[in-house]
Amino acid sequence: MAPASAGSARSDALALGLSLGAAATSAYVLWKTTQEPKQAPKDKQLEKKLKQQARSRKIESLIMERGQAGTKDYRVHVLAKGEEDMTVAELSLWHDVPLVAEGGLFNFICEIPKCTRKKFEVATTEGATPIKQDEKKGVLREFKKGDIFFNYGCFPRTWEDPRHVSPDTGYPGDNDPLDVCEIGLRQVQTGEIRPVKVLGVLAMIDDDETDWKVVAIDAEDRWAPELNDINDVERLIPGTVSLIREWFRTYKIPDGKP
Image (cartoon, rainbow, N blue to C red; front, side, top):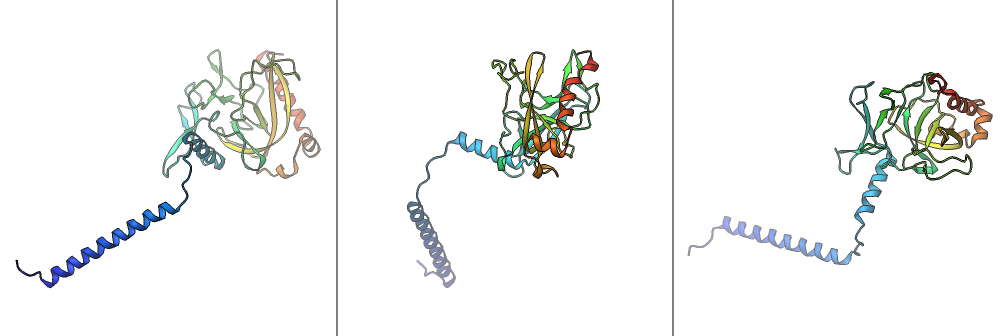
């Protein structure tokens, strides 16, 4: 057999060096793994829930409209950043968005922006519970009284139980999410999710059902640092609570209801 050339010898030496280096690296990784404490296996459902809540707390959402506005097919969906970069996932506004936000606040889902009159609501019987315009007897509903003067919507993951008779009103719940009247200066768009501070609650009776109205303020509103309860609202923005009460007392009168 012919002796190996100098170039061949150098190649063999380089290959041997790389092999020894790879072996040493593998041995180090194996040793390091044995030294690190083993983590308990995670509950996949819990892990998914925590990731979902983290996404919702950040409220990195995108509002997507489907169908033509002013028709029965029109829907407002909300997309949130997915678990991986460059991906999005549709949120169920009723089920996926957490009720509690950071800092003792609550997540408010806006259905009807202030200074508008189309009666939008979360479609609780549809998959992904998007927002749609309510209809009655085949006709899309609007407030005939005029534009509403506060942002109106609901709290996610809440439900007024029709089997429970409230001791405060003597009537059962209305089978809907808990309603919210957000009294801030900013107009919140349909489908927006905003952290709010709860200030109080009003008990309404509508068609022999209890219909609670939570009064709240956007956490970033100019008035938010100064408002902590209904007494503060009456003192600093007098007449607001009375106007909310009067709105719900009279908005159905143009429809022929007392």
